[in-house]
Image 1 (cartoon, rainbow, N blue to C red):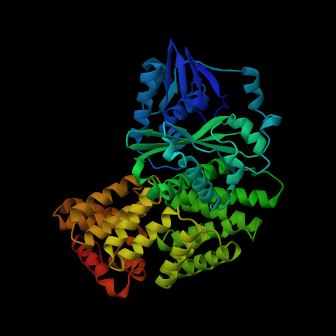
Image 2: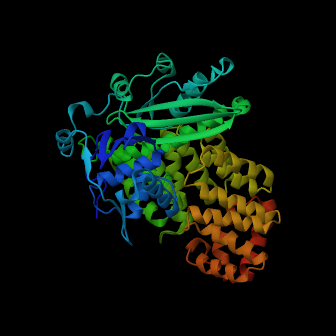
Image 3: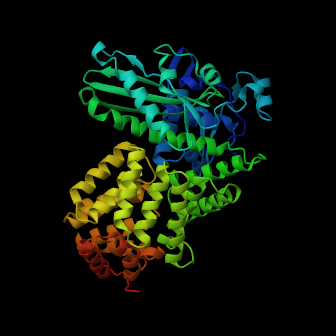
Length: 535
């Protein structure tokens, strides 16, 4: 089966009678021109890169939806869309193995393609501002009336401001980018002129009372689109939601740019700092852009340890190590005594904050470690608020504050913070925590049906997240769905941190306000009735 990618492709190539233009998301042929969804174009490109070999579904999911948790139905829908455009005979299904292109792929320039399989050409050298550098072009306005002409500059400025707060990203200043106005040079030319790797290009369109915002990221070295997103909102609500829009786009862009950069990191370079940053970037992707499981945590731990061994003053390395150690201790993913591991995680997070006080990730992890090591709830909440002062788009901080508010009995505020987190980063892997908080809030306020539904939504995001089976079992038991409750209790017993009533109490007690500890006791009582053992 194919290893992805088999070879890189130019911006244009042919699939049978169809000419594919990747940066435009266009497929032309047989007298027709089709505009593809960005994910459908990425799927077509991945299949074309495999050169007719079979690509397994899991590799397609990882390549087309990097860093996102999606169901196989998303892949089925994308394949169906491509077949509708190209014709069903161009994409073959290989039962129980995956998909392959049944039509020959012809690159636009075969000699150039052959050269790129061995070494990058001179013009593809690392950009002057580094592999995580980005330029944001002013948003192109289409059909906007004069009173809304300020929106392009407003959104461009807000997005540049938010991206500038993200650790590890180098962003060209607003003053420089506004000189381009509404007339944009080709992305590759712009990337070369400014010395950046990626170019963000967006557009604003008004349709009736709605405003459509679209944005894409172009790899300036290759001239190919790597990511795209879009959203629609009421035009009259723009003033109230401008920062939210910029925050959502900035969060998604950080995922994409960190993931792309970590995949191409120069791990064989002789410079220890370069290697360390590469290891830290890959650890970050495992922790923040992948579902939290023992496997992703172990990979992150190895990478983070390598980073701090090479560069002891690298904040991101210590932050990733702290997060991985916190997870291993909190969820009992290692044999080391829990408090020893949590104490080490707190010390590592404090070191990361001391090295780089402006890294919101470090403050986020400090909050986790402080809350669960010695129940330092006030310190933990202040760390989250400071995280949001550093980056107002930091969705996980809203989600973790929601959990704190819920365990202080402030249910409405908790739900509002969850809504904010989902609005800023609707596809974030860490959203499984926000589903759990919502489910817990529904349980506490006497709505087990809503709690059950929320738990199931979270399970669809990450079926390995044990806390969801805990609230799911309680909700099912209270609804009289005893068989379902027993099934989830059995699943819960496979998670060391929640395998018994005593384990649940130790794992969660420090995060509850003393006045609200009754919420935990009620949860434990129902879990006991549903069959979770005491020890």
